[in-house]
Length: 567
Image (cartoon, rainbow, N blue to C red; front, side):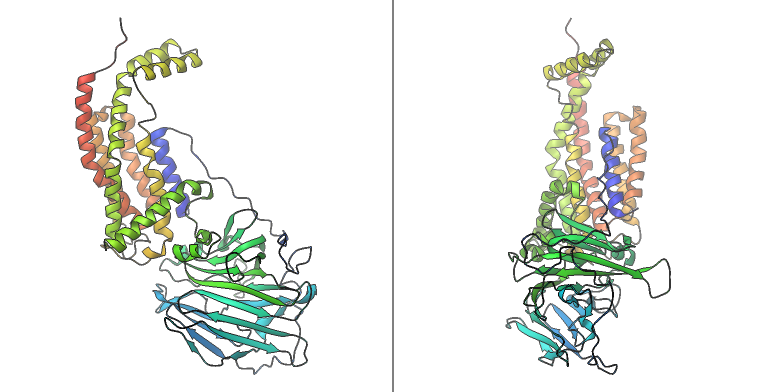
């Protein structure tokens, strides 16, 4: 079972045990029709045929040319900035490697690499004039200008690297220009092709990003393609689930391929307000070269609008999923790494923003390590909940006081449900009892818990951060100590509460005291250790509150006693 599914089931069990409500299930996301056509954007100026974008893998009848010689040597050009080191090839001007200088790879030595070994990205697949022929621009030897490597330091002006190919017989040409800035992961790309009507271009982003995390299975599981549809919403699909070709209809504000912490994004035009939109995304699926019938190779291809003059341009963001950087690019690009399930995001987003702000403030302003930040947040939330917990206790005491009268009403009107509800509500109004007041403090921590689950699973600032014996707060505890501590602290808080309130006499409460910690440990077992740390801290911080509230409950019950109906 996937971590997000276990998280949802665990929270459902918690709420169900306390509130006895029906179990809620997330809506089923409709399957994308693999045969669906990618429709052209309404008013977007792009020469896409009415039947949709051509399939770049249909009929590989590519233009032959004597210029592609078997002994043509590939030349590599390296561009280095304070943020990354990218290597581009003269074969089509494609990106062969892209390394992030500020992030260490946990899967191999050296910095994080986004491009898989032996693969390339930003490779152009050109379909000229609606002909159906596919020209793989990555096969043709381009000339690089300047020919040498480029190095940019902080404060340098942007620099452009141009790749150009001219067919010796004049059949076609290809030019692509990359503009690099030393302070940005965004690369501005402009290209030129022959001026033909109804041409189409695909950018190949490859089979997904390279693996860079210790838990390879989790990194592979989170490998997805994502698109922001103009007429719908942000859609995401995990690549490992795709065994057949699939498309995501446009127009799109952006298209991306992401792993757990890193992303490759294609954005149209020079800025977020550009009128050019992306026609769509196609995932091509083919049998694997290793001969296995059970494995397939996937290739994510993004449709690119080409004008009748043969010009196209886009922006490529290759880098970390830093929420502030992505948000600054506009069009909800920060949601390429969504927090929470789609149907709960409107509720979770405010808590996510609050949690991220609190984490940054405590870490950057108070200079606390991320582990101690979690401890502080757990304690602060319990302190903030003290008034609500006390109010819940007083409400429970009132409910217990009127319980005999409520039972009389249920017995008297057992055959008249409407009258029973009316009389019960009247009783509660007369004695100032709110039956929901006891549930509110239990529900308030839930959005925070859900928000922190996704924050610590996908927030790159926490990636690789050690604390105590945890090597990584965003990964599970390799020693499995903290899940046991979380379960033990849950049992301890419930045990103290029951002893102080006399709940030991209630067999249902005793069963819950033993079952709840076990269920939480099972479902939270492989969750990020940072989430376990937060939940354990919150449990331990609640013990003094439980003691004080339990003593106050006894004093209030001794003074009030059960309510009696007037003679």
